Length: 115
Figure 1 (cartoon, rainbow, N blue to C red):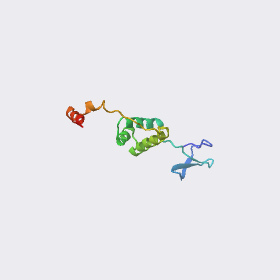
Figure 2: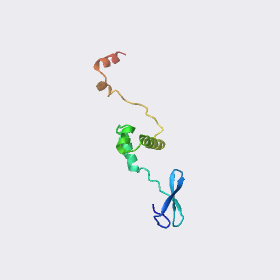
Figure 3: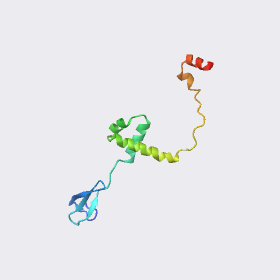
Figure 4: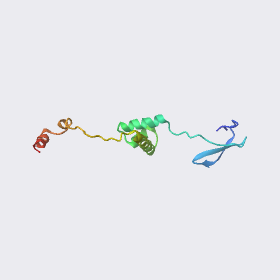
């Protein structure tokens, strides 16, 4: 750990402030904290892509070597950030008849025609 003021390498731990380690330089007496490293935005973007591909939070956490709770919080924060740009108008009509013949057996379709 180098002192940002004088550049000395003679620094000692000097407590914790807001969950961040503080240091004190023995040469000049300057107190400083380490910068927050955190997780890169690229890893968070990759977690979101994996989630959209269908992977679960725990499997994403194992793959990216981070906590599944962190993955959940990143995805939740991303969802909240896009709420503001979401359209207020809902979907009026959804046409599903094109999907029914491939998903439903013919016998059931014949029963539906009678109703």
